[in-house]
Image (cartoon, rainbow, N blue to C red; front, side, top):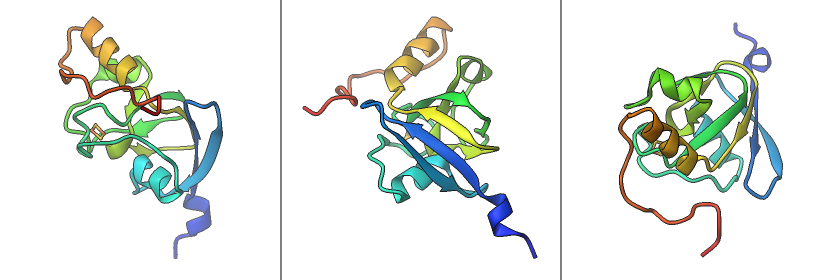
Length: 125
Ligand code: FES
């Protein structure tokens, strides 16, 4: 029988207000789902790894993005993850609310990115 405690991964979310929140993530669970279940206010929209709304910077750790509809090697090299469809492959330190930065990185690499303006995710308005 598997040892569930040994399989637990710790993900720390750094939010725009500078606070950090560490939650347990199961290996088969998407990182966004674990954060939302812990009560964190995290942005998301498509939940398919497409729109970049859930983007985060990966400051430490590895994320498997094989469930994402659109994720490029350049995204990984630039340090971005799509939390809605990402599975932790070890403990993580994440900086959330990185949609605009990831979109700019895609633009600079000549890669597709969603058009349009969905407002400022980092501010109450
Ligand atoms: S919510 Fe759309 S890419 Fe994650």
